[in-house]
Length: 298
Image (cartoon, rainbow, N blue to C red; front, side):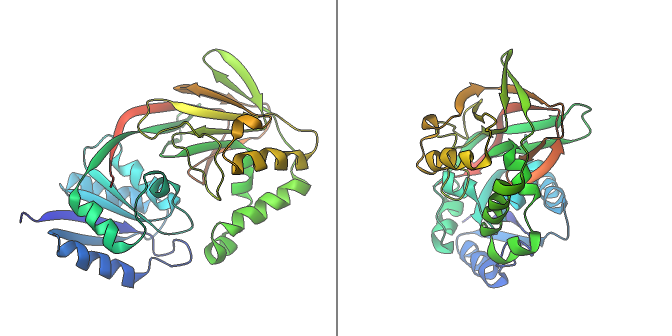
């Protein structure tokens, strides 16, 4: 059996499990029995996962395993975009909607089988860039503008580490009473669309059982875009939320569009988040980057 070399990157502060050294040791043992030698690397701060992933690719590792939530996975993708090195996704942390979208198993034994089998799928990524190009960020699953990003900015980080996704629901409930919508404009194919919230989806998942871009696929070279208008009363967004929780965004007050390139602008302060991590205020451009990353799949 030819031995393959893998780098396992994890965030020791991710979610409530704190990286779970016991789970990591078990995974390393499982993979060693399948001919995969694993080098474990913990992140020490923001941006470390991207650096570690970039080094793993440059050193000729046969694969990179990202263990953590969507934030950790997003950072790893920054260091691997454009490479041919496959990425294995091991769900941990607060959430990992990409793992669910790819139907990856949650138990270590089954996931080790998937990793050892080495089946790959080439996917596209999204790329958010500020107008002055000072910030450039890839995303795997989605980019949220307006209400969504404001909720992310309002999340209590201590509560997030203790309770996971519940912290986002708490921030969302607070927004029902104190949030003042600031409208923004999306330029999609030369047409202007005003919204108070928009989700640019690369995949169909979102989190918390919510689905806003049901026809988006990770391998597609474009986005599905869900745009909600500004409502006079914040509680009206609960009706839209109910539709999305049933997986029927077309039955809300929003619209669904497809595009490869989007420009987002606003006269006020409106922010954008990617894969649950706040990036920058508008204006930004969002573009699809086809054939950008290899991921391991069942």
